Image 1 (cartoon, rainbow, N blue to C red):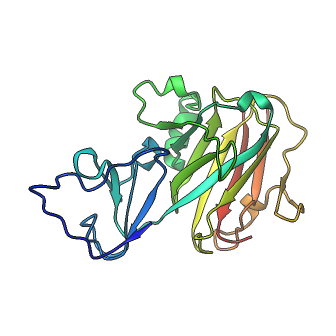
Image 2: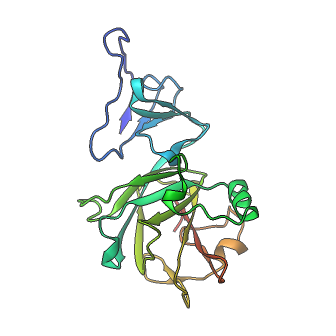
Image 3: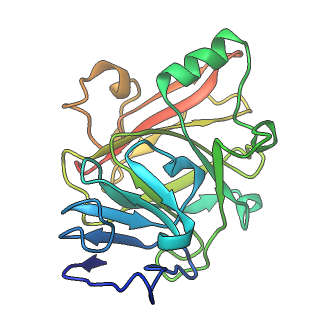
Length: 235
């Protein structure tokens, strides 16, 4: 949704936004008259993974966060999955900076279980939607330029999962995603829209400017079992 040229009487309209189901809307403020953060700013409902310095949380006035023009908010959706045990599980997502990850590894801890986030400041939990776009999937609002960690339920291993991006993604917009797996895997294969397999280790052998959506790397050691991949506007 794009808005512009809005006016408000703060005395009679103290709350400028009120979100409703499914709480995944993205509002682009073309001239800053909604958010007060300047032309090209953003607003969306608040989840923990959007707790970023570029955004301000204001429940009373905006019913969520408003973000400055230095970032962009975009939509991704995960769907078409197996096993069926993932159905109706919440997807749990956290911002996952490399320095935070390094601290965890130094302390020999792994903060991927939702219960370990005792004060619920790191992970957000989003319910599955029945549709229509996608049918039985998990649409998520993300901030471009960030790194996220995701899992389903209590870190249920998925066997198959698809993701879609909105058509608004630009080639220079990217997020990096990592997810755990518990069972030993011979491989995890990422394919593009044509069904062509994207080679493993493309995530670690390219520069950020060279990365395309689906570039990935798998760590399949006993002590580290992670799958990391890129989502951007290139395909």
